[in-house]
Length: 381
Ligand SMILES: NC(=O)c1ccc[n+]([C@@H]2O[C@H](COP(=O)([O-])OP(=O)(O)OC[C@H]3O[C@@H](n4cnc5c(N)ncnc54)[C@H](O)[C@@H]3O)[C@@H](O)[C@H]2O)c1
Ligand SMILES: [Zn+2]
Ligand SMILES: [Zn+2]
Image (cartoon, rainbow, N blue to C red):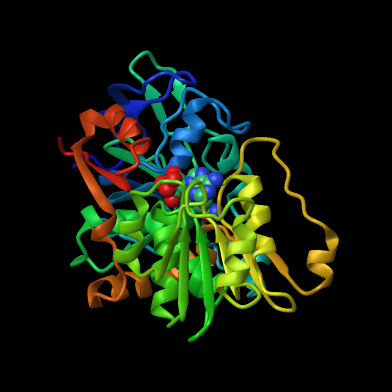
């Protein structure tokens, strides 16, 4: 039994921005009160991990254990943990849900204030880290998850138990990308039958927004991507039209003009899943006058700002954002797992690559290949 004892295990440590991760043994301390130690079984690599590792994330801090799209099994729990127990299958949640803070109780948002400040600093709620390398140096946590380690410690508000019959290898993707896009369409936008939708950017997030819009019965779902390889993926997830703005516009025509023309005045909902602020503006301006809503999901470069003419909003367009698809991780993950098991939510289809954990640096290279949606890493190898 490892309960109550430090565990030595393999982790991928980010020592420096712009450098590959270092695979090495680290020490993972036992969980303190209201903390949970998880044996991570599978994790995927998301763009936010690459963004932080690249060094452009102003909140990125090193040395740290990155990773936030992971699933595993509870190895032990600290004092006063009541929501999960040893042996539970779980997904780590970078958007915590405490159920008692002002945010959680508002009924208006999935953001939770309980661990926000310490999570942003890369430490546990008591201000310390549970990770150290074999030289004894403390390693920081990341997004309250740190799934690039065979064992991790998270706050109890940052973990949800799931149906143990759901394959962890697949549902780890519900820890970020798939949930983010699907929730943005079905919850933040709340797309209704017959409405029209445009999704800018056909990565995992955009494709999952497409599947959410399709599940709701949207009449037209247009995918806009500068990479032609995304057309086939888009169709697989339910888009009705595909536009490559680099090739498919008439001379002098803008993407906004093209979309407005295709939809008799503009879309009911648009989603930015690129993180490009110029695209965000186009997405807003392609919305229908009077009611069209544009949802920003993409994470823009540090310091970037958005702009449009105020007239766009005066005339009824709405600009919104969405984090983790507006989904409350502990209350609503069960529904997503069920939808996956029923076959109404596609998850496996996003796994284009699988690798042993030891090839994690190659998984970061995969991200930049147009043909990759998600690489899932098996931490037992
Ligand atoms: N808000 C959240 O909670 C949240 C969660 C996860 C990811 N994200 C962000 O969402 C975004 C998408 O994530 P992903 O994993 O799907 O990324 P991805 O890189 O796999 O997909 C982005 C897609 O956008 C396309 N693209 C790039 N520039 C474009 C342009 N100018 N016009 C049209 N298409 C363009 C790319 O070809 C690619 O297919 C990222 O910015 C990511 O950081 C946000
Ligand atoms: Zn992510
Ligand atoms: Zn809360």
